[in-house]
Image 1 (cartoon, rainbow, N blue to C red):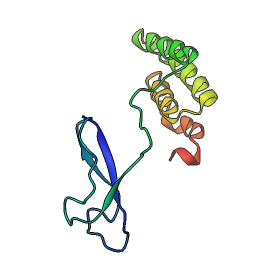
Image 2 (cartoon, rainbow, N blue to C red):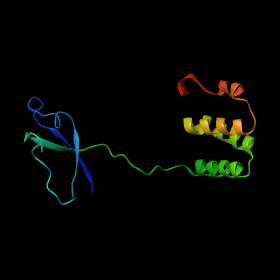
Image 3 (cartoon, rainbow, N blue to C red):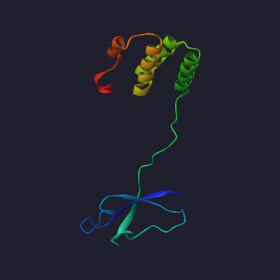
Image 4 (cartoon, rainbow, N blue to C red):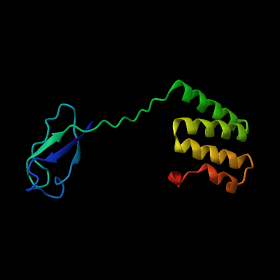
Length: 123
């Protein structure tokens, strides 16, 4: 069942629930609410931003991810780290950068030598 957002029509006469947007789970065929379930004040359904749960990745990124996993599976930590590090810089992916740092450590590099790879924004 979909989740719909509602907000108060009259911003001065609201309760705590409808003073800001709130969500309601309703069936597709169910009529939209017109009054707040708490205070009975007038409300309207709001068109909200779609938050997709599916993230599409480029074929290049999928290929790089597969290669990194293969290197990690084989225990080739420095290869995995270098590929992840290079690709994270290209696509500006903080999580991939942290994975690269983890792989560098598994390859035997000391954490102190890796600190230069972490920018101030990552901390």
